[in-house]
Amino acid sequence: MKKLVTIALTGTVLAGGVFADIPLVQAAGNGPDYQGHETINTSILHTYSEMVDFLKTQEKKQSNMELEVIGETVKGRDIHLVKYMQNPANPTILYITQQHGDEALTTEGSLDFIKQLGTGKSKGLFDDVNILIIPMYNADGAMGDVNYELENYAASGDRHLTRLNAKGIDLNRDHDAKTQPETQALHNNVLEKYDIDYMIDLHHQGAQWVKDGKYVSGAIFPSHPDHTDPEVLQGSKQLGAVVYDAIEPKGWGHLANYAGKGSAYDNGISVYGLAHDYDISTLLLEIRGTADNANDFEVLGQKSNGYLTKQAVIAMDATARAIADGTINEKEVSFWDDLPVQEERPYR
Image 1: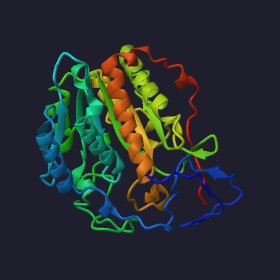
Image 2: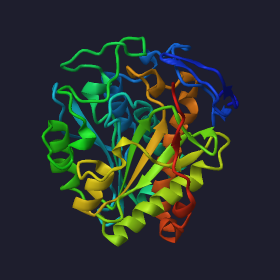
Image 3: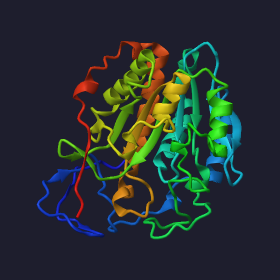
Image 4: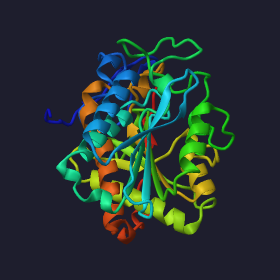
């Protein structure tokens, strides 16, 4: 991997103007916001068919892995669930990636994690934990195969990636109403079928968020204290503690407490609704910058792909191991009280 370097942005020209009188802001890792200055090419990301081929190959190679189709997207693409379940009595964790189709490095990270689970690095892990993974949950959005125009998007390549599903519905606002086939598949064939104890919902956020004057590498967010059973909330916060302790010491690691438009309580949001409805200790992990967007400030230059993908892998690996060896139950959660809420860097 290329050595990651710290960079500074100052006086950057924006689509709508320039920064003025803004304090120096350091990037936690390599790669500035896109802002039209760097090529963003979606062809370096797995397509849906490439992902399916990868999963089928890994299933043949890995004796502990089982691949299940849990339903279809609006456009008829199979939704895959990767399962490592040797003992149903063991605690189970579910990882969901790419609920939003333009948040692609979560899927890239999940595929790297799946490959890692087939190596000696994971010896003995499945004796004590069950792992479920949904990679590329919103496959239609990830492929840009939608019933609306995608104009002025930043990326070049063989396709655009977009947040919503083919019908223009935000799947991470549909967990209460369950109007979409993707949501129905998840709830009917995963959440109601398996006894899930923990879940991490992996997303991306805009590239403009900072903590302590530095761009964040990501943000974490537990379930809501007023709408979650106390034991479930404790588990959610302990998941966050595992992720924080695994990522923050890295040279590029810089995690904040999440803040954004989705932070108001809404039972349709997975971090809230799944914790509330299924008593699943759920953590939201937001990774910096999207892979494509009509808003330039949402997109991060692809020089950052390496460390951001690795961040997703580390989060999944660390939490699976902490659940397997029981150390998650020893995690202190008081750090949440002092973890700064990220702030949005102003744009003009």
